[in-house]
Image (cartoon, rainbow, N blue to C red; front, side, top):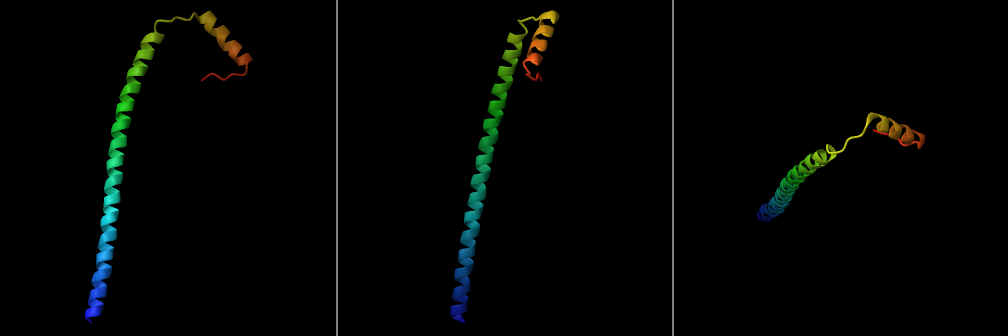
Length: 83
């Protein structure tokens, strides 16, 4: 009977160690996800600033309607799709 109890304790200890390792892995995954989310937030902010800068630069240029029609027609001739 003592051997059975010792065997049960050994199995329970092994199971507890497996659960502990799994929890550590989950914790590491959560930490990585948080880090990635912070990086994405920073990158999104940088991208928004660049978009704003690009918009301000683009507004300095003007294209006449006649010239724009010519460019669109030429691109259609070249089989280039415009979006």
